[in-house]
Structure formats: structure tokens, C-alpha cells
Length: 143
Image (cartoon, rainbow, N blue to C red):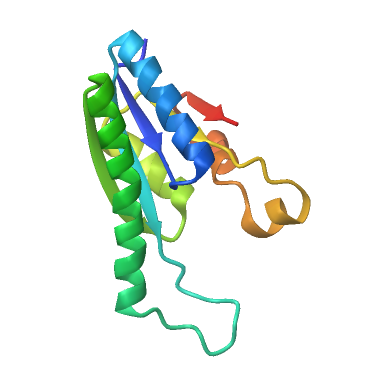
């Protein structure tokens, strides 16, 4: 079915459920998994006077993203699934997910959706929705 699956995570509880489901799927189908977490760096803050980003902030975001992909690696090792993990920095997670899927020659993208609605969806957007719309690969969304 899918030889190589890109599994995107943000470290949330829903993403952790998607990790387990994806790894089980990969084990059953002999797929390799490429784990990815995007260290999202927002260059502009909506608060006046907070336009700059400190290096400590960037380090903290990267550390969190690394922790997220380590969860994928640990779970994959427990199940015996072939996995590689990566952290990338970017301002638009959906773009980084799609670029990574292409760069690592994946044939599918699996990720969680937070199911935001109303004002939250308008203000925060839906990265899963953006991946679904812009990706040329099959996308599986876990809710």
C-alpha cells in the first residue's frame, strides 16, 4: 500500500493518538515512517513591541519539536517499525509538511486534526485542512 508515510506531530494528545494509529498501520503494512515536527517560528507577534524573536525562544521551540519526534521514534522502536525523524523550522507548518513529504519521497501523509471550529478555526487556521487542500499525496487525518 504505502511504502513511506510522513507522520506529522505537534505533540498534542490528538497527535499522540495519530502516532499510535499510524505506527500500527505501518507495522501491519510493512511501511516505513518519516516522523516530522515543525518548529513553528512566527516572525511577527500581534502585540506591539514584540516583533523580535529571541534565540532562547527559537531554541525552546526546537527543543519541543525534538521531544515530539522522539515520541515517534520511541513508539516505533517498541512496535518494530522502521522510522526516521526530523525537525524543521518554518513559519507555515502545512508548507513544511508538504515539502518534507516530497523531500523524503513519501507516498502519503498522516496527521491529526484538532477539529477547531468557529473563531478558533478562523484565527488559528487548520494546518490539517491546508495540507489536505495543497498536498498532491493522499492525506489521512485522525480526529
